[in-house]
Image (cartoon, rainbow, N blue to C red; front, side, top):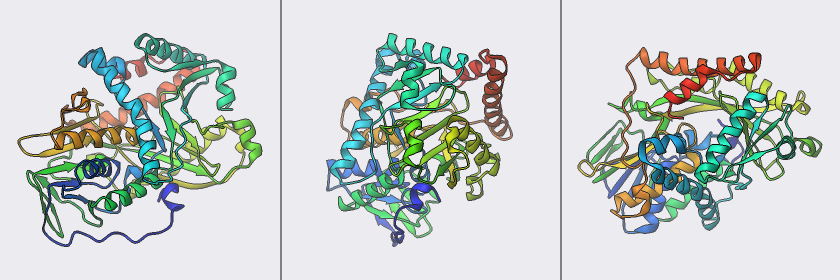
Length: 448
């Protein structure tokens, strides 16, 4: 269980599907994507019969386990999107993502969801000369495009995040730290208040046009939404649609004011650095450090299992990196460790869409940046389902269909090779002081 879920009061699961049911919209998955879609549908048209089906309990997947960054990050960078969709479309999607950060805060306030929302922005530290050069290039490119990203001096970066070896960094205001389990649980309660029927302990065994099948019965609906992200490969015919890759996290016990006096994060800025293998952290509302990163392997056959949520090797490495960043932690206790799968599409492109012929809709492929993106997906799906010709339905990720991943063992080799390249690139840059050519090539392959 994630730290986020562990500190919430225990509640009994909702009842499973009682039998065959007819609906206007059936949503498979009660994470952020499914619940945001249900929320905006119910707000726009209270007469719609919306049913949400969840295999476990609301927020069981990434929505209750993530790093708590409600950010404007999208898997494809604006320059990469501009190359394939044009600059105007790329900037429109970026603007929509930036406004989404505020939209999540607005809804949380309106629905009385106390999810510890704090819009302190994101600091990405540069802790080597190579990283600093990468930060400068990123800011120069962003400024050319009119994107709100600022270069920080060493003093400015250290004032915000008091880590070691800081040479500078970048700052964007478009991110809020949240308690993700509070958000997803509050959202589940909100949709039920709006009349949405939410059934837990109801695994969907198959999705097809007009129906979602479960062991408890079938939900028949002209629109069926797949909102299953990292668990998508469990559905028949979708083993190669998404690669589930694990991200793991640790959280300290509450830290004293003396630690925060030097560590900073006074506005609960989310933080990372410019290494290749992603790390991410936040100061929680109760003064812990919650810190995570990639590094866990992809499992053969797109397997997803509770046994993959833990890796002593990765947890130890996360603790090592965290203490390297903040030596004052010393032997501070790590009170919680957890993990879970995120979803990666073959072309590293998140997508949302609705097939008007079959009535099958989908959203996902967030590559670990789903807290904000799922809200935009939910609003977009609500417009697509209701046939509303809004600016959202014209964004360049709408209707995109990613190619399928290669069959095994090619998929296993490809994903795990990528992880090894990025890990090796960081070690190489630390050793040589020069940018990794292999990492740069991999970034281009992945759509960076």
